[in-house]
View 1 (cartoon, rainbow, N blue to C red):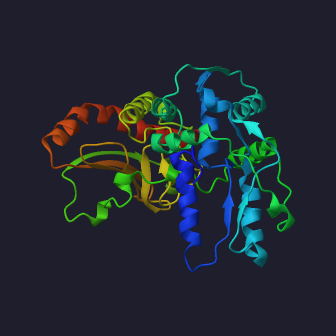
View 2: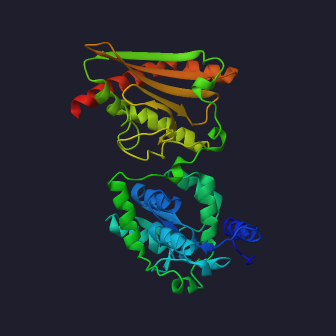
View 3: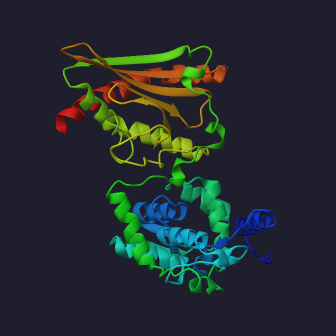
Amino acid sequence: LTPGLSDHLSSRIRVALTLRNSSIPVTVLRAAVIIGSGSASYEIIHSLITRLRVLPLPRFVDRQCQPISIRDVLKYLVGVLETPETIGKSFDIGGADVLTYREMMEEFAHMLNRRVAMFHFPFNYIPAYAYVASLVTPVPAPIIRSLMEGLRNNVVCRDVHIRGLVPVEPISYREALVRAMDREEQDQIRTRWADAYPPAHELAIKLREMRKLPRFTAVYSLETDQTAISLFQSICCIGGKEGWFQTNWMWRLRGFMDRLIGGVGIQRGRRSAASLKIGDVIDFWRVEDLVSGRHLLLRAEMLLPGRAWLEFNINDNGATRTLQIKAWFHTRTLFGKLYWYALVPFHGIVFKDLIKGIEKAVNKS
């Protein structure tokens, strides 16, 4: 391995070597920063530029890299599969521009017409930068830390031999940003780094898989003449940029507190502004179950002394519909029970506002 490489970059090389030593034909493509809607690097840069006006930077942001569009990466991946001469070889792939990390952020700010004061901070302790950045971005601190450690190295294509085998004309960094933002504006993001499962929740038990349903519950309901479809569409738009109606500040405060202690927080937002599918993230919730027009079940992924769910049900009574919100909480500890009872007074405020807000949103639309 090359001396001086970060642990993150070194691990990528070790993975490549392990795969090449197997009996499976392998072609290795080495890329620096991949720019595309949903990519970790793009989400970090986008969040820092759009949410901050002052941005302290470590000195190693003046290192060079060669960012590449996700579309160009896909072209190379397809190209090497169709080109037998690439089997067993390693190639560097990069975009049309060689930039410093600072220039990448300045270009993004210029495109968004935002003035962001960037300055070198005489403090290069990466864990601290990663922690602070995680408070304003949807990407977890450990991932940010790994990526930031790689900033210490220049990551520029040294070998462009692949261009003679796979004819790809890489686009510029600016064009890659434009295409990524277009995907966001068209609400066509399919996957995001922010949607990755937190380690403690990857194999989390589902509500209906529990042998005994949680004993701690809070139920709120409202009868309305709105249609089931319109109510469900309104439910499916909560969170993210739309927020949580009048008590949005309380949800955001809870998310910020969770992020401070190492949880997912509320910065993850949501993949799509108007549609949901099982597995989607809504701030610090994840869609566990969904029946269009009738039922939505969210599982909490914040740090809790137990497990929590938020359930929405729509029951058709003929002339009217009943919209019901039910909070579930399971705990076996004294602290968990105290946590639940401490929040009971706030449930009435938050959930009553939420259920009324869902109905009012139908009228507005």
